[in-house]
Amino acid sequence: MTSKKQSPTPWTTTTEKEKHSKTRETTQSKFFIINFHFKYFIFFLISVTSWFFILFFFLPPTNLKHQPHRSSLSSTKPIKSILVVDQRRQRNSSTNVSSVYIYNLPPEFNLGLVEDCAHLNIYTNMCPHVANRGLGQQLPLSDDGGETDSDSGSGGAWFATHQFIAEMIFHARMENHPHRTWDPARASLFYVPFYGGLHESSKFREMNLTARDELAVRLVDFLRRQPTWRKNNGKDHFMVLGRTAWDFMRSTESGPDFGANSLLNLPRVQSMSVLTVETNPWKKKTNSNQYGLPYPSYFHPSTSAQMLTWQSKVRKSNRSHLFSFIGAPRKGLEKAAIRDELIRQCGESTRCELLQCNKDKNNKCYEQSEIMRVMTGSEFCLQAPGDSFTRRSTFDAVLAGCVPVFFSPHTAYTQYGWFLPDNPEEYSIYIDEEEAMRAKRVINVEEELLKIPRERVEKMRKTVINLIPRLTYKHPNASDDGGGGFRDVVDVAFDALGRHVRSILAGNK
Ligand SMILES: *[C@@H]1O[C@H](CO)[C@@H](O)[C@H](O)[C@H]1NC(C)=O
Ligand SMILES: *[C@@H]1O[C@H](CO)[C@@H](O)[C@H](O)[C@H]1NC(C)=O
Ligand SMILES: *[C@@H]1O[C@H](CO)[C@@H](O)[C@H](O)[C@H]1NC(C)=O
Ligand SMILES: *[C@@H]1O[C@H](CO)[C@@H](O)[C@H](O)[C@H]1NC(C)=O
Ligand SMILES: *[C@@H]1O[C@H](CO)[C@@H](O)[C@H](O)[C@H]1NC(C)=O
Image 1: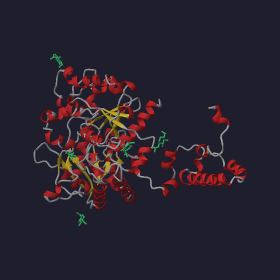
Image 2: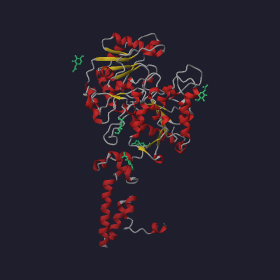
Image 3: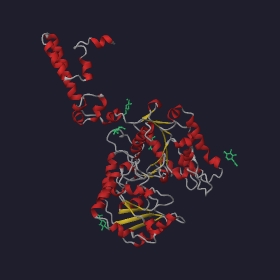
Image 4: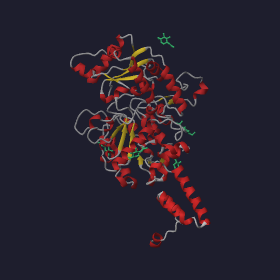
């Protein structure tokens, strides 16, 4: 060690010096000494030339002092213009990129549940909906949503997707994700692919609460025993739920029983991050582990070309109605009063298209083609809260390039922070009808919408259309993930989770 330090000959340490970025002056003074030894001079000249060569091509001028080769390669502009850095490699070499390990859970927690699809939901047969890994039945439509002849329908991007199925699609997407790792030692995120929503909806009517909670308790017991869990006490673990958080937060006080289980009340689940289509918005300010995840809509493209085709169609769409409302009247709740009022206003306005959902069988309001026809034909789509604050319809509206109109901040603003712009005015209209009704006033929605300047409407629509990719669930078999593919819900969620977990583990939260 000491000998190395004491007598470094200039020749043998040239390469080391490159690494330690000695100054130019030192080498220049040495130049005169070597000048007498021609042999050495040639050798030195080559070294110096290659040194400058390396400096010029591989190191940014400002970064000479501390130069972690790989990160400077991917982070400096001049280099990028010289070397064509493959996007894949760049993403891989970035130190911020997370890798995800997917637990291989016993089938009773996911795929086993799906096998009994006829009994998964007390209201409907889920078998058609769990098909195609949760995308549902494929629709015979071309990329621009138009009718297609039967044989070109295979490869298509449109599906009759159920609103509460995000957990299945997320799982299928993660399994093919480029950042999946099979080695838990290399993972920074741990995904627990429990189909908690599908299971919960099969137990709505289970009166024995112990039996209703049994599977959730067993899941936590399974996790507790994993060495990968113990490493960070589950703080780097996450779960995805396709139903609202309310379905998993059974109140301990005696109250009406809506069929919820207690999954989200379990302490071990509270140390994980939980993505759900509707969070409890009042817990946000305290220490919630719930993060809003968009509902799935009907469009699941595999390529950017399919996405661009649809976006372009939506941009050109002829919006002959100022606004529209799709939904059913609700009974009882305070929120229902707003719905009834909107249905009345929409029905009375020639500028509004009303698609009312009734219980009868011929009702078109659950059909993709009818929903897209109405929404691509309207400038604004009313999003009145329903049984809960959020609606899948919000995401159908964005997909249709229809600017959403909200009546509660909890329908989107307090929910989907990872996915929507910070400023709601960029992409939506907010009408405080609830407040007005409390004051025994009624706001005329049509009048409010007509007041908005043309340019602002165009600008909002442009923002909405640009949001489509990040609010879309890509087809799980999409193969262009690493290259030019667009970034979808799962990619955005994955990055946000990575940042979030890093910050938790660093003790910032
Ligand atoms: C990242 O690197 C690993 C090995 O270092 C490789 O197996 C993997 O395919 C790379 N991922 C991407 C997206 O290129
Ligand atoms: C990587 O993480 C650092 C620190 O958390 C952050 O400042 C930087 O913006 C991140 N880079 C990327 C590309 O996400
Ligand atoms: C994805 O591809 C595999 C293999 O071709 C196929 O078996 C599977 O059904 C596909 N998944 C979906 C959701 O279409
Ligand atoms: C409730 O369910 C649990 C677990 O399945 C069972 O052990 C218990 O006997 C049940 N209680 C009643 C009252 O049926
Ligand atoms: C747009 O809609 C209006 C009203 O329905 C109709 O008169 C017009 O022909 C349509 N334009 C196109 C290009 O379809």
